[in-house]
Length: 273
Image (cartoon, rainbow, N blue to C red; front, side, top):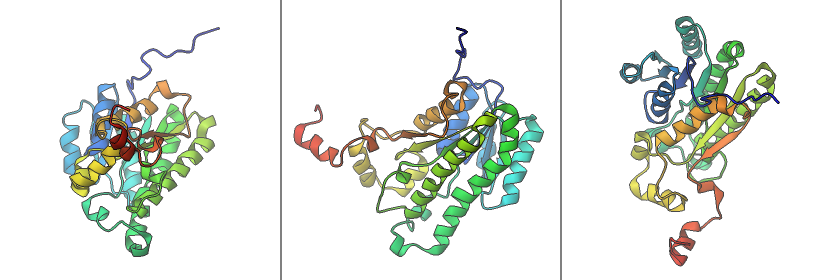
């Protein structure tokens, strides 16, 4: 039997990767890691100056302004990448409408502003769909792949972030649809579902007492960092994951894996049990 093992299967040498929302948080951590593993990374973000600052520190990187509410902006981004590098191998759809001002009004459906719901879906779902649509013809020529950032909130009910959660649930179905439609074209599509991750935006949106509640239900001793999610994204984008497609990789420190009330049981029986 001929071995089909791939040497250095987590490497991304000579790959061209777009990371949307790449100027900060999970996106920036992913851009750094992919660069370290050999990729040439496009940092696509609405905050162009921040994207340029990061790109200046990464060999072979390119910063591009991206507005996911603007269809022309998305198409122009993909065109510029292919023109600049001559190829496209990986798209990490990480950008989303998320921040302290948004989190403050994204709550229960009963109080949901229609404008917020519409804008959340315009950015998180419609914008990501267009990015995938524009990228797919180029990914077909390189046997490329897509990794979408969703959320553990898209898999569980909560009393906050109803619009954000619903939009990320839609991305899970889109991930599966792309995987099903394009697998025979040698294109993979997967999603990563972070739990509460210690990005600057999250720390600004959620005060320490709320973060402590989640940390108490996490199986690890602390919440995840952006680098933890970047490792999952880079793995799914690499040849090592060639047989994984249409899947959601939950990266929440075990939060969703246990019975409700674990923190209370831990207090009753002690942390050693």
